[in-house]
Image 1: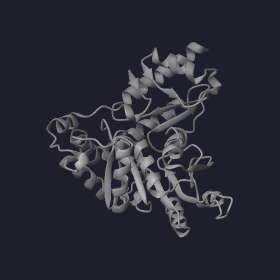
Image 2 (image 1 turned 45 degrees about the horizontal axis):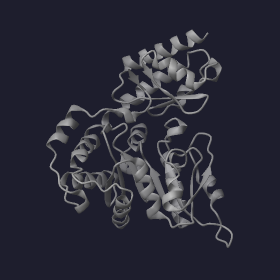
Image 3 (image 1 turned 180 degrees about the vertical axis):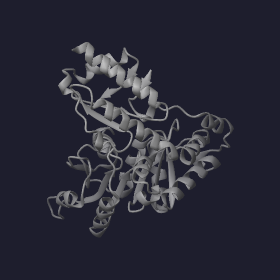
Length: 344
């Protein structure tokens, strides 16, 4: 099967498997796992932050980040298709006791003027806004990347207003690749950053939360409350170190394959996509004109050896990663073309 459902389906490389087998371990709850400690220190250094925390998932990382920046009964501003809003089981409300204030941006990229208009005034009738959450790359906006000047402007103005900024950088290395900038440049303006080791970087498990040392110390307690206090986690952190050091340089291949997919999809009757808008490794395309619902197309593609999901009744998403080659992308296009021809 060719699997384009997500870059979360990647399998660990041989180097990761060797590192996992040979990892030096200890009890991480006691902070005695040397491999986890190395990963946390290295992640913080790469992002230009004081400290890091290894967490099992990106959802846990985002949940903890919101908690360390807010108190119950406050508001958090995010884009209207943000992962924290749609795909994290309302953890922001359940664990942090905060309300999300979504702001729509047609291309997924918020600007300060959009955010400023949504800030709740201090009054007897409004819950105060205390945090701005930004997603880079923006998953449901097709892997859209924040221009540096836009993000820096958001952070500068937010800080002037006394607000914190959390960056959901699940795919921040993809954004850095697209911008051809060191990843620490993208992380620098934010108060905290979460990024995934288990997506484009290919580790089997894990994400990182980085920020100020005092905040990460508190975050460690919240990780334990959420059940994320792992023991001999060095077997996982070892793969994370390989992901962090060796995998970012090859993300451009995934981006090139995504652009190839987009260009070929644009040639198929009934499919709507603008290839010029594909910046990283996520391709979202509209199938309304084919007469097929995304659920039906998903089933038709599976019978042809291709796994791909719809994100709503009219749009499909394909995500490239290091387990899918250019040749397999071409095979995927052939499968989609065949499925559409069968419908006609």
